[in-house]
Length: 150
Length: 169
Image (cartoon, rainbow over all chains, first blue to last red; front, side):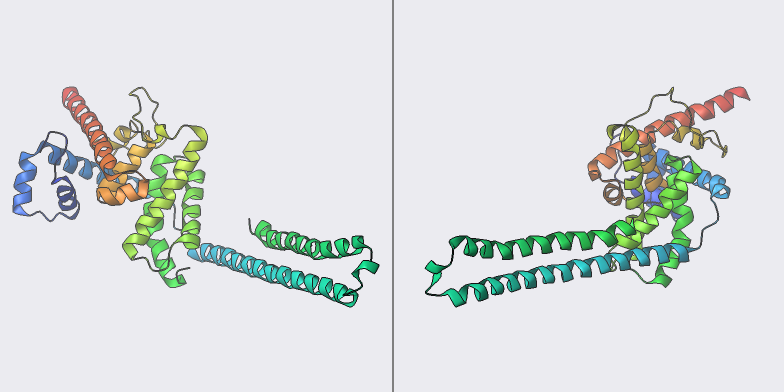
């Protein structure tokens, strides 16, 4: 035990708060300057709380807070669903794009040399463009409800 | 999100306590009100649903403390949140308020907002050092040291105050 810390300090505070003192703790309190200080401050703080009790405004209706949080929660959930749906759209669009590219390419099997190579290049870019467009759409759709919820 | 009935009970119980806690560091009543409401709102949005009642209370204090720290950070450096204040610091609005027997109110105004927060959590709410460390976001050993300094400061002030009262009689 030093003149700055005491292992019993928290037990003394608890006892002073509840008014339930073990005889040994009471004896310790009387002989320990740190614990006497702690108990004194605890008592003073409680008198402060009692004195200031009148300043506390009446408790507002919790219903408003509850509804506000429930609404925000619902918006968050719907934003998540929108994001998920948009992701699914993006995947589907990419699949459609690749399918379209394959469908475009298959009739030319064996006669590729007759088709200008730039046509294949353009066709191969198409799914990428579709995917980028879908990703942009995802961000747009998912950001709309989030902005409204603020 | 926790169920409405439990939230109502917690709100009724904790609103005055949280208000008193926040008001100590945020004397402006409108700002204090905002902090308390925001604390409850964030609590509802982010608190895990399987917390015990005691954990819910300390979670609320944690949110409120973080909100006050954030507001404080906007104005001053975070170190000052827990730093000691000078004796010549002006008294806050609350400090010049009610005199409750021994003027602990004035003594509290000598402490930084962070120290006031520690003292409140330890002596009014009765939290252990570990719990306070979790709420305030510092190590338990730091809480012990910071509380010791705050306790010494308050005790010195209260002793001086008592001496002055005795001398004036």
